[in-house]
Length: 148
Image (tube, rainbow, N blue to C red):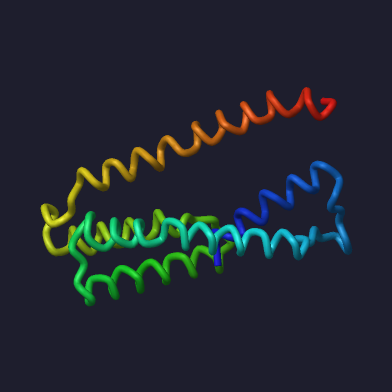
């Protein structure tokens, strides 16, 4: 209820900036093809990397037992649904990772493999500046080619 909406919002606002989508009745409407595209991209991304992510979350951060997985999933679901209800964007990956770390730390702090979590945190920190750099590079290359 949260990740796909953020992507749809970015694409729709890009279309608004370009002039391809306009207000109707004082509101912007997300085109159906954007909804289908985002859902398809998320499904393909999950299919392509889901097993690896599940393995990392379930065995490399901490060896999850069914009760711990249930606790982590329940708390993550409550957090994500609450944020969505309030209109707050959150990353489901960040929420579930934090919940799994919390479950592990509740047993004992040493149960969490902090080296793995440190690598995950670095990936999160580096995602924004690297994405910005790639976007700038694409713009710098494509803008002159498209008559800008």
